Length: 166
Ligand code: HEC
Image 1 (tube, helix red, strand yellow):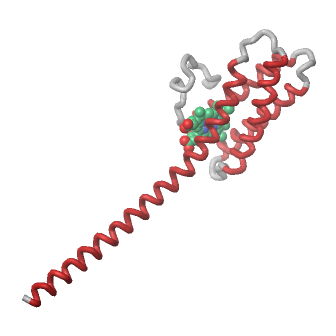
Image 2: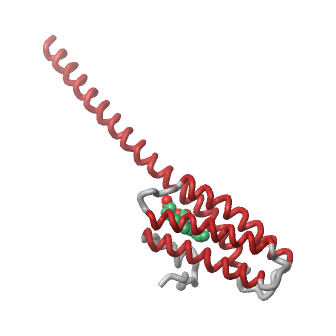
């Protein structure tokens, strides 16, 4: 009788021991997955902000004339884009991917150029230049997403089939 109880207790210790270890292992694995997702969604959140500001400029890109109100959209969105692109370049660099690095920097440069246009908005041709910058920016988005095999459109941009990438 005694030995039976002893056996049962040893048995349960072993069982608890094993399940404890596996629980630990699972927890560790889950933590690892969570960590990866966190990093991924951080870039996704940044992209969403980039997207929002880009879209603000795109929405008015068919206008024949920009009044103060539209120029303000270009000015604000490009300033915000510069800020966001700087974070993208710094925080989400991919040193092992030359093309990615180049496109990441190009995105920042195109945003800076857009802001330069905003600053000379009273000059002749500024409207066309601003609209050109919207296209330059869009092409950079499309090239990087294409490079990575990310297919955001058409669900994000209904009606957009041509993103300037062939
Ligand atoms: C240098 C590369 C690069 C450039 C340039 C780039 N993207 Fe992205 N984009 C990514 C990567 C990588 C992801 C995937 C992020 C993730 O899910 O972790 C992404 C994802 C997105 C998403 C999806 C976010 C989500 O909710 O999952 C949107 C929207 C987006 N990009 C918009 C843009 C726009 C607009 C531009 C241009 C103004 C742009 N991107 C330029 C690399 C780039």
